[in-house]
Image 1: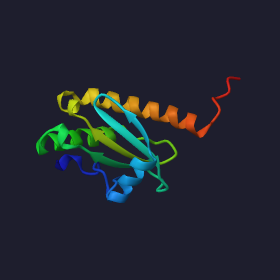
Image 2: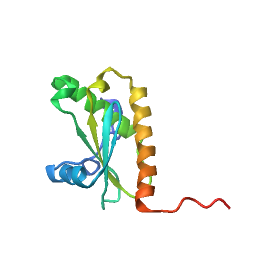
Image 3: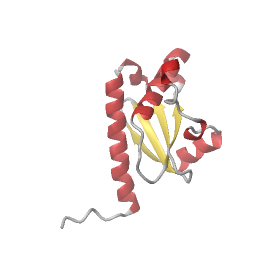
Image 4: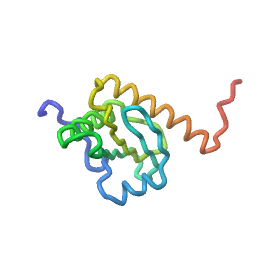
Length: 131
């Protein structure tokens, strides 16, 4: 993939330790979908970070790696630019393997929209004033 230089996720953009994953799963907000689950927790890094998970229920190693590759590409193409910075863990489901990239991206965008709505409600922010 020599043509994609500069497009990869850098080390600071990834969750890398078990403790980071544990914190997201314990304190994060979980949104389940048909293709994957999204778990998000606020971080203090100033930018979003991504973690990926795929259990053996997804399939053999090739299928798990393919599922994670699809989710990683989806994250890369649809990066959030909003505050606050989040740690996102995407947990692949078996159904992900039989879907197109467009379907995965559509669900990812829907999860992000739901996340923004739920985060606003949980933070207790009032709805925008309609002058």
